[in-house]
Length: 201
Image (cartoon, rainbow, N blue to C red):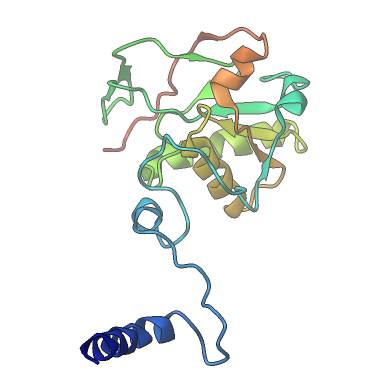
């Protein structure tokens, strides 16, 4: 008898948890995001932490550009490629915008390097400089595609592509394979010079 009472009490104690997981029609609620996901994204959906991780979604309204299609483009000629990887260990003078690099950075030939523009909350001046570069290119060639990238399994290129497209720019793409994917496809990399953007802290 005591065993039966204990089982009944345990079953009753579990009822609130079961009720919380179902709606009025008895169907299970949609899966709740994990704590890690909540911490890693802001309210606008940009990645703000743990940037080096597999990317599991599209950068809507930008689109993912398949690597074979990217390899058919000529960065700096018929497409604007923008590298947004931070200057790891580098220091930027907020007054002059000059970077003191801790190590050289290799990128796709013809690409422009805008360090830190792929952060979840980029410095305003750095982001506006990237936008200005795109607007300048579009004045010369209105249909030129813009390709944002960083590394393989890195959210910064995703962030930048999504933000640029949400800012109203069309024909914006994200190269998920990034620098490593380009190089592994047999293409060379070159030493990059970071874009100088003075006047921000």
